[in-house]
Length: 172
Length: 364
Image 1: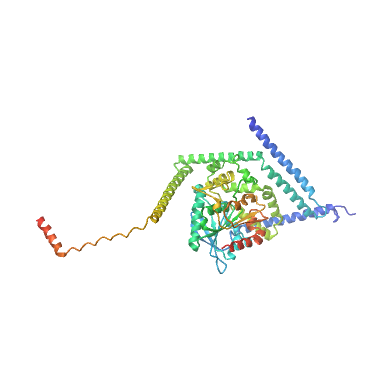
Image 2: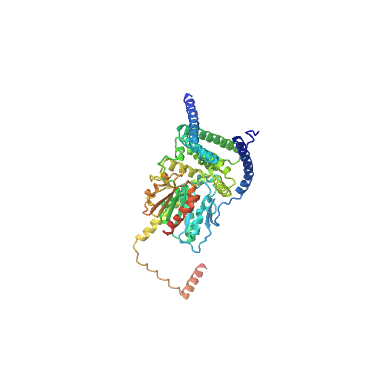
């Protein structure tokens, strides 16, 4: 509890210091840049530009301090927690009405992405296999040309007719 | 007897007069505001004529209609960041990077990554580089019959282009990077500090929000220079509202700056973790899917463009790239500009882009 209070005090101090620094730098820059010879609007512009430059430098320095970063983290955590609460509320409400909610959608998307990864993996394996086959094919020496099988002698018509008659007799 | 208040030479009289003048001038400026708002509605998003030649999911490939009588053989593909719309590269006449290349006869293509939907939250480097970018580059190679392409990558698009070139060196003829973050060991930039794992839990953030919301990105960019962006800029606009050219430029730029899109959750998270937090690319630990990205595999000619006053990607993050690659032909160019000025700034338009065209032309 004390730690949190100290943190908050540190952050408040850092903010206060940043603003004080800004204002003192603005004063110095503003007074320093005023030239007596220049016409009033130009002198004013120069002064303003000096003031802004000083302010910008103070802000830039401040945004690098651990105090600012802690404040930033706290606000981010709050935003995340709020968003999670809102998401949860809508998920529940949609479940109550048997609707499709973000969670269901996320599950579906992760399932699709898993399937896609598996398909990719299979694809990869297949292309590896293809590559291996190609290299094997290249590596094997060219075999002697195969002998073409002899063409079957055409069955003579008479012999064929005899064979048909024999089968007919057997059936009878 | 004349009193000091009615004497025209008295200070009091002058002060009153200037107060009244200033009041009337401001009233007149109020009238101009509505005109500026009307003008803003008519701002064109890209000026060079183009046609959509390929589409995959929410991503489009645009080809710019050639103006030169003869086209160069090797096409040029512009790879923009996923963070904003790509028409900053073709913002308006006289401020268009694309028109430089088109006028010089380069067959110019632009990848418009489009607006990711909620269901695109799971798209990461693997899907973008090994998927979409590869598919689009192969499509351009098929269309043009060119074996290789020239790539120009801007900001995050430059980082992705360098990863692509490292993974597919045989497809890239020349690589031009524009303000591309490569080496994140330098903790100089505010973004590097803000994304420190101690202060920024990117996984919880993406788990809660899905995609990285555009408002979050815009707020982060505005906060890099809060005084300039939130105070000085509006004041300058108010003072220059009578200057038509200034107003035109201002409106074009503001239209683009406010035209934000979400970044898919997974790639945002990978970008923050792998690059900002663990600097994996320079340490040869970056993986796209299962493949290791080794920058030394980049052997094509490389031109690295940097902006001296870049607060988003400081030169310290881009410059080391040339020492990490395997190319013998590598050059850098740096101009006095900011992150956006590198593309549309008058100095870049006048001096840098003609030189970049020369560089590319001599390497085709």
